[in-house]
Amino acid sequence: MKDLCRSWLSEEAPARRLAVVRILVGLYATVFVAIRTFHWLDVARLPVRRFDPVGVLGGLGGPLSPATVAGLSGMALLTAVAFTLGWRFRWVAPVFASLLLVLTTHGNSWGQILHTENLLVLHVIILAFSPADVAFAVGRRQPSDDTPRHDYGWALRIMTLVVVIAYVIAGLAKLRNGGFDWLTGDVLRNQVAHDNLRKILLGDVYSPVGTWLVQFGWLFPPMAIASVFVELGAPVVLLGDRWKKAWAGAAWAFHVGVLAFMAILFPYPISGIAFVSMLPVERLADRVTGWRTRAGSNRPVQENR
Image (cartoon, rainbow, N blue to C red; front, top):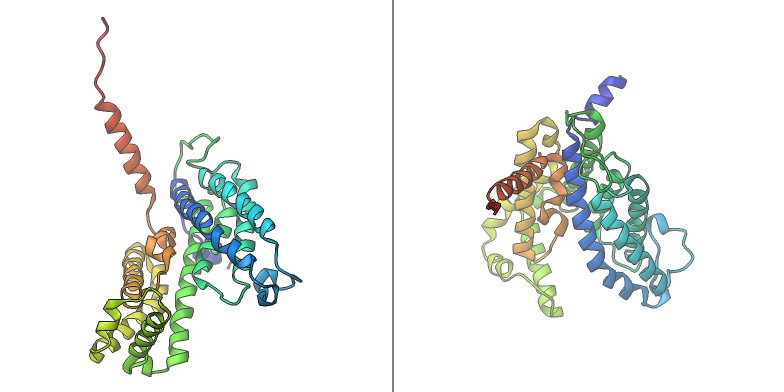
């Protein structure tokens, strides 16, 4: 039973794949922290009565001061860079994961919970406790043996399982809230129309494509079926590499459609970083290495005079 659980929860992967996933997730997280800091500071200045702590901060008696949020954000940015570089990873990575969890939770404790951040935070936490610094890490020698091992694959499998669970829950929520009408009726059409109309009335960014398409009712049942098919079909990634690539492409296209029809951006999936745990991304490192080798070989050789 132990071996069965190990083989299902883990997969063999080269150290380079886990390292490239660390770098890609770390780069995204670094940019995320740099941009999101302004929002965290803005909500920290809201009236205290609006603070309603959630998650790991559920027992917090009051909000963090703007100065504290600024300090934590600065530390998060520095540790995010170290996380990406793999520098002193075993110490720095858990610190960064904790800071990211606290800052995003505090930002969500003011009346609006942004579930679009969940995947990123969970992926950072998983990577923080993995050997993601074995390859391509500052201060560490590149390993000579890059044989795929379970030691490097378990974190990737758990990251993938987190993605699968998130999408399945989203698909079940659609069916629970909309019932069978979500697939055959006007639930999706009404949702697109309502969301865009609300944004127009509030002066927010809306989708001209979505507002134009709502006149064609026959388009929306097939799109609703496709969306639920993608979300509930997420477990197919556990069947093999071809299924992983196919589903990741379908999920990415799904988010492009949401952006086009409702002007709702899910930046982590749209960037593709949300799906890198299920792809052979070490090939990116091979391409960079090959490019550097070719660039070096094409340099003119200076003659000795």
